[in-house]
Image 1: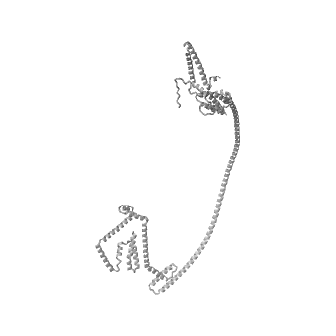
Image 2: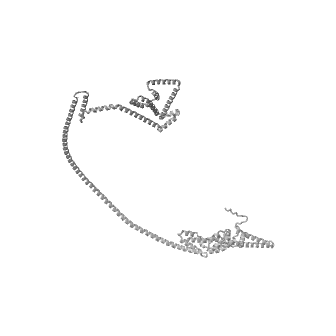
Image 3: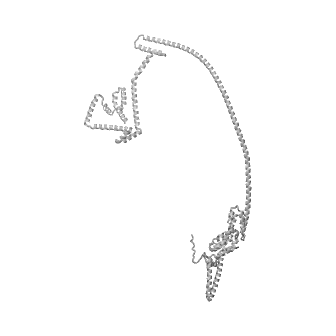
Length: 532
Length: 86
């Protein structure tokens, strides 16, 4: 905003300047100076001032005319003011608006800088928040920075331009003064050429000055004087040169003399030092040699000692190792022999065991053989068609099989009574079954608590019943009897006994003895089988 | 073989009972007949009915005995009730 105002001001000043140009065309330098000052003071220019500037210089070609014009204008303004107060009021409004705008802008700007003020501002003034935020956005986007930079750049440019103009003006003014003085001086100094000697140079300057003075003051024979002075100066120069040469020669001689002297001194000193060095060298060498010798001797002695120690230690160690090895070997040998003895012992034991086992086996086999014999005898006794008591065989078996648990347990189950009485053979049993079968058949129709007449009836009716044969099904007495008969014919006593055991009531009672006998027979048979 | 005399084998039980019954019948019917003959001759003036009646008594006693041998639990007036099968 400020930049814009400045620009406007500059434009206006440029406009206002154009008549001045026409008026003061002759004075270029002064114009430039004014321009520079104008440009530098641009920022301070006021709007009203600009307005007046714009108003006044336009018409004024001559002073009288301008005055007249001004008067006329003043009159017109007065008339206008008299006519209308609206223009003044408009001005007032404009002023207030501008002032208010500036104040508002300032407040916004200040609120950007200070938090407290901003809070208050936003709270109390209408629309402040939006504007502040807008400006903050701008600030954030860097618009301000850019504008500020632009302004600064522009300022610098303007300043540089001003400076440039100023310098150029200065140069134009100063150039003649600065150039004149050196030229004159150069011209004057040509009178006497400058000698090399500084003293003479000084004298020459003095003489030159004197010549200048003489030039200024009109003295006669001045040329002569000058010439004489010149000659004298030259003589003086030659004299000085001579003196210098002489001096130089003397100095040279002195230097050479000194040089020689010092050379001699140097040589003698060098020789001495060399000798000293040699001596020193020798001495040091001898010393070192001695030291080295002694060191060597000591070292060698120590080394020998160490070697001896080492040797001794090694010998001791080797001895020890040897002893150990020998011991170990002896132990091994002895151990080997002992082991062999142990081995033999072990073998012997095994042999013993084998022999004992063999004996036991023989015993066992004998025993089993005997047992087998007894068993055979028992079997024989049982399988005899007649009833033979086998208590003797049982006793023999018991005696023989005292070690065998199974046989003893099996034998213990056999009843003494049975053993004494013997068992019926299968043929016996089947023969006995014929009678049993008849009896059972007779009693087969008796009810459970039947009386005399029931028995009589059963006996009578059983005569009339059909006889069954073979493996027939059914749970009635007749079919059971048929099955038993069939099994007996097949020599299967076990199943026959089981079948007969299914009877009930009087038939069961009648068949009980037979069942018992068959059971005994079966038991003995089973025992023999187990013993096998 | 005293053992065998004492113990009869199971299939002979019924036969033994029958033997006993028959001998009982013979003895008791004989006693009844003889008692009836003596009584008819001495008391009832040689009438025949006392003979038949006393013989009948003898037979009846023999029957009762026989019945008891076959089924000793069947006492008249007593009924054995079996426990219900559980």
